[in-house]
Image (tube, rainbow over all chains, first blue to last red; front, side):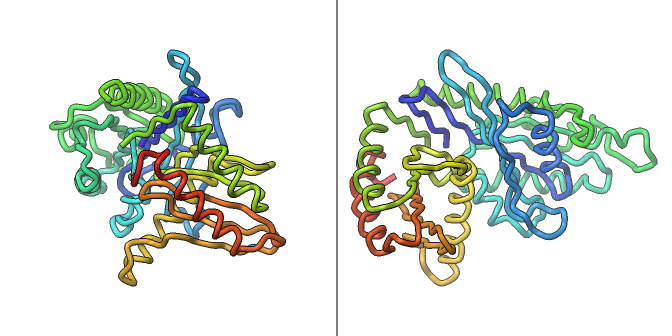
Length: 203
Length: 131
């Protein structure tokens, strides 16, 4: 749910990074946090748990400047990717305005990507949100492994698996190196602000 | 579901929070929605990261609502965390909002509970009824 404060001329939107476990959602946020200046970013919150999996969520607030006199504040969240944490994913998805789906390019993760996208569709549907309506951007992460001896999926194959029906904007990325991270954020922010303003105008 | 609040509504919320909660001795009071957006904060939040507090409180409320479901409740109407010097009290406002009150060890919990209950009744109509 976006929130518009007319006394401060401020819009707050919520963007969630979704995707299978160990796919690089937290790494995306960490890269953004490191690469941005203090004037843009707020404090990144990671709920400290043992191990490197996200058990609840990570959170990073950003101030993205002004559009037509309204200042835009965006809050980025990640969800835990592992299948068993679905209740937590639903919680974090509550009131979402835009979604980045971080897909894992590793060949062994092919099914996990498809499963996770289907899980997103279901969780949104339970909240009466249509996956085709809400702004969604796909990021094919870990493309930097292309030259290594680890088998990865081709972009065409990932498009076929995940984006054939949805036809949403997508980016190749390497969250670790920062490739595609800002492009993804720019696209989803643009889509989300448009979506929120369209909803407001129709009120 | 989106929420748009006019300057007038925000002013009404602020005066209700100042009058009922801050005057009872609370250090700081925040109104947030259950998706983690900070709507209003009042009092003296020196060195307090209110944006993170809003997000974590919404998550905390969501997590305890799952505990509530395990014991056959829909959710809990209030939560209270006690620290050495500072305490935090969360009250549900309607279905979509949470009132977070920070207060020191010299302030009575009962007074905070009484006043937050009263301010909740004032806030619900401003926030558009039983949201």
